[in-house]
Length: 376
Ligand code: NCD
Ligand code: ZN
Image (tube, rainbow, N blue to C red; front, side, top):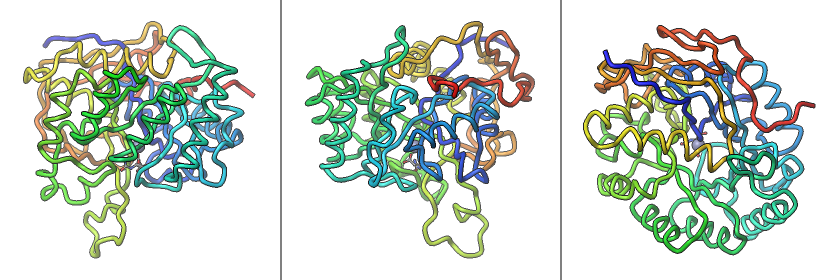
């Protein structure tokens, strides 16, 4: 057995589903699954019911997370078409604003140029008063994080350039997109991006086998798209999961009748580290690739505070077949089930306390911290 000690990892794209969808996940089950995956900070997405789009909703979500989370949580705010800028008074208390420009699950879609333009302009105006948050500077704003596919990506890049706003592109999945981001970076635009494990390790070739369990937004790419992500890894700043749990029933698995509109999205927070370590084992990634994209870069991009005395011990020799049974996510399934993986998470220590060990959550609900939000 060879034990590797890593710093606590960040998953910068997680749907904890609370409030509104707690039959899929809540702040306890989602952060428990995170610890089981060697993650000590999750950044939670705003497409809940109600959406995290006003100061009251952010405060309510912070209270829910503070009561239940077993790892630290940063909260995104979102923009709705009716209340586009309603979150601005609490913008510094969010890890970032998330704008859903392309097809998604939930009610937060913004796809007109006028609204998109307004959101970039008001974020930039707010930053003139507060600045942008950096790794060693609290306060200020995070980046604007967008789900923007295809041509919408070019609109967001242009707006970020015009308003000098740091832009983070969520879940990049296509050759055309990673090549445009590469060009934008070479041109000096302040843009960063993330890629999910499902877009790195699955493709349209897996759709026949996975059915609805392979359906998410952005959709799986072709093998050529996947190859492009690997070729351009140097331009990928973050590996994040887009942990987006839906129940097997909602996905239509085992249902007598196929659901009319099965929701897109797949869970992933607890399977990313073994998948990445397996790629290290195969010589496709280095450990430094993981540390940069799961720890240092997300901390820098979102200005996350240090977590002292925090680490994850992994047995990098342990190989196992991933089964749904071993998962802590409430929905109890993974698109990677059945895969042979190398690297078992043995223990997680958060601020000097053993919070996960021997397959068990040892932390008390509420022991995780909610980042950036001021107590009322
Ligand atoms: C996400 C969800 O279910 O919340 N689904 C998905 O397919 N990724 C929404 C999103 O991230 O766009
Ligand atoms: Zn998402």
